[in-house]
Image 1 (cartoon, rainbow, N blue to C red):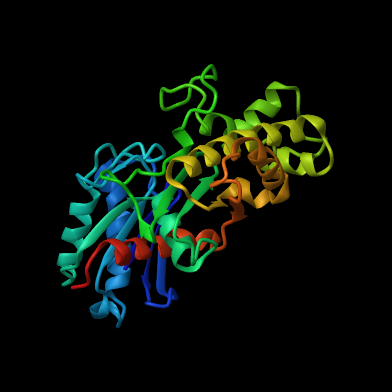
Image 2 (cartoon, rainbow, N blue to C red):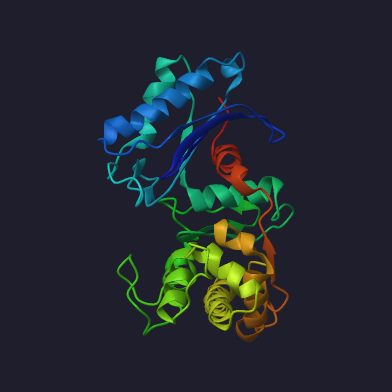
Length: 311
């Protein structure tokens, strides 16, 4: 079984060995409540899945959550779920499973690691022994496949490329660092920089987000194009640095900003030629993710299969 926890929804599904999903269910992430109030939505998702005739066949449980996560302690402190700070999500889910008669091994990973597991199992990194997978959205996250193994690290945060610094004199990031990829290339950063340079949505449009900037870039707006070029350069620098360190041969990029297509991918690939110059990274490929909105649930299940024995 898989649980995907985010700032807007909490989803669950039973995921089969071929990656197909059944009994998919979801609840909106509660607002204006305490930690137990948020967990009540998770408990409802588990109860829905426990009502399936396939419930008794479940062998593992994977939990993918917005971060930060601490897999070593089983806790989460999602930036976009203020009621949860060091919330013991893994123990609480295990107790809920037991209440429904399922004593399953569980694993907790961040959403970037879950996406990585999904793309390696069924998506754009399938068949690749070493891969970096990224989510470029409101924030920037990621995960690593090394020697065909998911590499979450001790706390479940390995591969968190959004907080690699690519501009040592850059602006302060929300994490406290300076010049992080997220502060340059997230959807929030793209829109903020474009507006600071004087870009405004065209008359009749109220979309001042990165999606609006992407539309303007496709129409040839010079500020919008520069905003995506800036983001692409930051991503290229971080991708090249990661590949140089651990010898990945592909970077898979998903998330809302990646739906802008070549508006984002063209500058990444162009700038990558300036950063990935050593012989062992010069053939590095950058490709779009394949699994879209299903990556969270598929990835939670994939992480459980890769990191846990079956009961």
